Length: 212
Image (cartoon, rainbow, N blue to C red; front, side, top):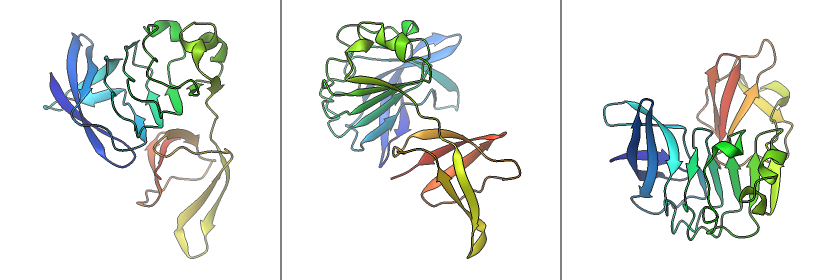
């Protein structure tokens, strides 16, 4: 086992992980060193070991988030293929987001979501609502909705500074801490600011993290 750090919307939490595969290098999230104080947790698809080695996150173990009653939003990456009874005492979670387009590839049981309330919204990739709804354990969520695409409606220079751009996004809701994939219009280059968001350049598509 070893310990990794995972950021939330207002702190950094230490998590005990266990190596389960060496080819490819994979770990399961075992337990928290202390309860999460934030409301948003985005589980990363990879974590780093002490020597900088990258491990893929493939599973979430029993009681991993037990007692995290501040959490209202949790995002699970597509690398995760097994979720045990990880949500004990997480009755305040309102939204669970899953990135895997193939829910049959995720091992769950009738106990996996037992710690959640009956009013949790499940957010799934575009075009996969029916795939999740037809499976018994996933169909129990209050509602299953697709992730809304986020694109730029308008972009213009701030009159006080040529270096500042304003982005108007055509989406109704942005969740604090959530990563949104956006594509910039032709001729527009991303800027790096230490304000309410940052944009990380990856070719023509950027990952934008909104912070509350």
